Image (cartoon, rainbow, N blue to C red; front, side, top):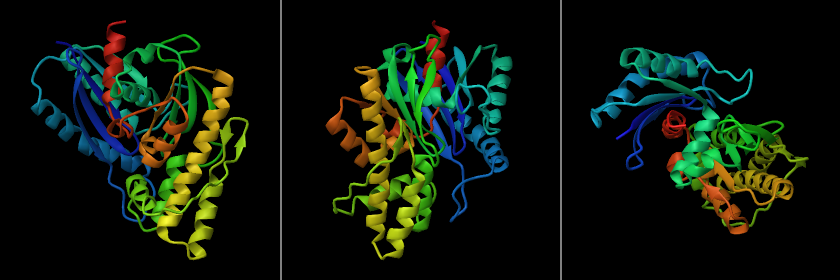
Length: 310
């Protein structure tokens, strides 16, 4: 039995995971960071504070279900695997991993939060071989709206940015409109539920520059529709359809260039059923299971196992 510990302290979720390579099972514990009602985010100082408060309890919960040995530790250290990518909240997970490494004499493997999202998606759909094979990965969340060429340039889970948002991230748009409608942050699940109450045919046009998208216009239009008396369900549906149109058009443009590479979709926004169902009806593509779409440490634990056995 080889069990690996994953730690992820992202901007909105504290997460701990134990991954058992013998049967592929995970023990995963995570908790959202608290955000005051009516607000659409956290200051990094507050995020760090809440991670420090929440991480010990999550360790306690995880190890209450497992009392065996750990082979290695994986930790997310930055949002992306690029120079200059940094957020203070990740230092909480790094320090915890380093302390455990010294106390338990275990190796620590460092990955980006984005690499963890990709690996979690592949784990959830039973495609672990893609971790070391070329594919296209979309990472769409509150902090990121990007398409990446993965493992096309050499290196372990190497990523090269090939498309992105030029303004708002998709998750930011969802949260801004959601708060506008009186929903609680983070608003993804509630906005999707509200959107499903609208059965009007809404097909907004996506604005692309090359393969890059522009999403800020969606917020302005949502405000306009709300002021015109459109129902909250209509505004919610429009917002999700606006994002769907952009992701679909980006997918089409990238497919024209990269051909038959597998396409994988990860990140919290990609758990939305409206977006997922539309894309899967048109393309041969792979989506993370919903429980592995939002921030989690499962991918980090899986990556630690792959790296440890490389």
